[in-house]
Image (cartoon, rainbow, N blue to C red; front, side):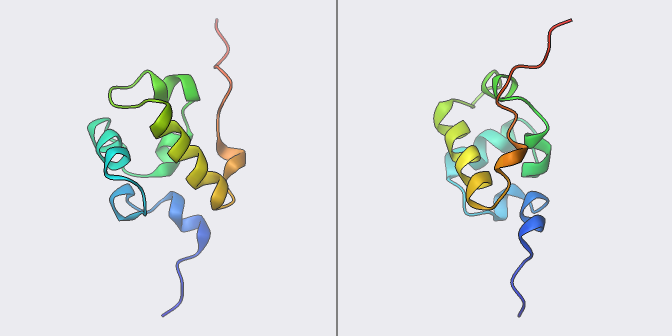
Length: 81
């Protein structure tokens, strides 16, 4: 069997990834199906969601960085209009 290409990890269901139960619960409560959906938001937007805290953010950031997707992390606040 061939290993799953790394890029598909962004699109895999979060429930199938090696992440903590707390992470998976927070993602499910906020209707995130994949890490690609989460990576579209800024850090402060994620941290404002129910169930998300700095521990969940650190797990998210660590997973993305460990899999070569650190460049997708939106750590800066979105511009205010």
